[in-house]
Image (cartoon, rainbow over all chains, first blue to last red; front, top):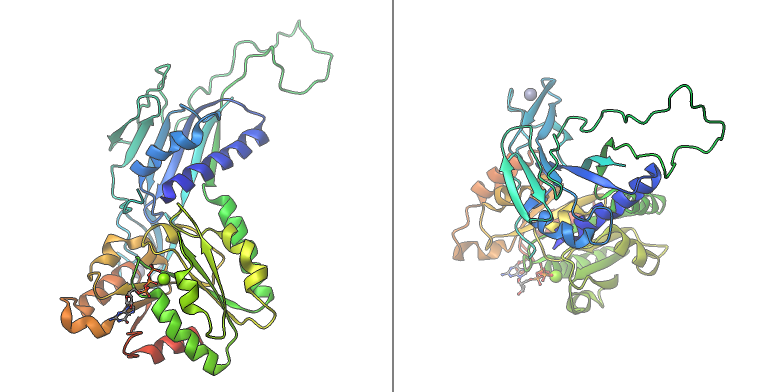
Length: 113
Length: 289
Ligand SMILES: Nc1nc2c(ncn2[C@@H]2O[C@H](COP(=O)(O)OP(=O)(O)OP(=O)(O)O)[C@@H](O)[C@H]2O)c(=O)[nH]1
Ligand SMILES: [Mg+2]
Ligand SMILES: [Zn+2]
C-alpha cells in the first residue's frame, strides 16, 4: 500500500522542516494533490494517523487540495489547466504538450510554532 | 489495501484525525475542526496577527540570546512549502541516475499489473540480448519469492531479486542498495522489473531513464483511462500477449486511442513473448542506435 509509504515520507519530511524552523508544534497542514500524482486521498488519510503517532503531526487537522494539471502547448503557446488527466492541447488538439505542474504530491503549507 | 488510485475525488477534503472522518467541500475556503475547534482557512495566513507581548520601549533587552525564549509565547507562523512528499526518494533517484550516467548505462523500469508478462518478456529479451552480446543486469522486485529471478537466471545477465515484503513497489533506496552488486563494469543495460502493480510503482522514481508499461490483452482496453498515472508517464507501452487476441474481446485500436489520449507521444509496441510476434520491434526499442 503506497499511501502508507507516502504517509511515512510526509512525516519524515515534516520532521526535517520542523527541525530547520526550530518549531515543535504544528497547528495545521495543507497537502496539494496533483491530478497525476496517483495518490488515493482516502487511503492516505487512513494511513496518516498511523505514521503521525508520537510526532508533532499527531492529531493535526489536514487539508487536501486538488491540484489540476497545468499544461503548456508548444505548438500554439497556450497555457491551460485540465481537470482531467489528459495531456492534449484543448485549443489546437496538439500533442506537443508539456506538463508544468499537477504531477506531484506536495506538503503545501504548514502552520507551526 | 493497495487501492486503485482515482484522483477525481472532491475538490478539497478536510480530515479530522481525532474524529477520523473526512468531509468533501467544493468551495475554496474550508473549515477544519480540530480537537480545540479552531477554524483554519486554507490559503489565508491564519493567525497572522502579531502577539501582544512585544517589548515596550521601556523594557530594553541587553542580553543577546536569539529567538527561542521559553518564557515568550510562541507565535504561530505559516510556512509556504510546496515541498514534495517524496523528496527523499527523488533525491536518491537522482543519485542513481547520476551513477547510471557516469557508467553510460541505460536503466529502464518495467511496470504492469501482476501477470501481464513482464518476466516472460524479459526471459525472451535476455536470450536475444545474450546473442547480441549486450551486457545486461536485472533487478526483479516481488513481495515474496525469488521465482522470477530464477526464471531469468542462466541467460548471461546478472540477476538479483529484491523482496519488498508488504510493500507494493520498489523505491529508489532499495535499488541504490543493490547497485554495487548487480552492476559490473561492462553493464550497458540495466532493467528493473518492478513489483506487479499498476498504480503504486509509478509514483516512485528509481532513477531510471524511462518507464515502460505492459498491458496484456486480457486486461481490457480501458486500463489507460482507469490508471492514467502510469500510462501518462511511460515512454513506451507494450501491449502484450497478442497471441491471445482471438480469444478475448480486446480492441487494439480502442486501446491505442485511449493511450494516445493520456499520453500522445507514447511509443506503442504490440507483441507476444510466447509466439515471438512483435519481439523485433521491442528489441529495436530496447536497443536504440
Ligand atoms: N499466451 C501468452 N501468455 C503469456 C505471455 N507472456 C506471459 N504469459 C503468461 O502469463 C503468465 C504471467 O506471466 P509473467 O511473465 O510471470 O508475468 P509478470 O508480469 O512477470 O507477473 P508478476 O511478476 O507476478 O507481476 C504466465 O503464465 C505466462 O506464461 C504471452 O505473450 N502470451
Ligand atoms: Mg514477474
Ligand atoms: Zn495548442
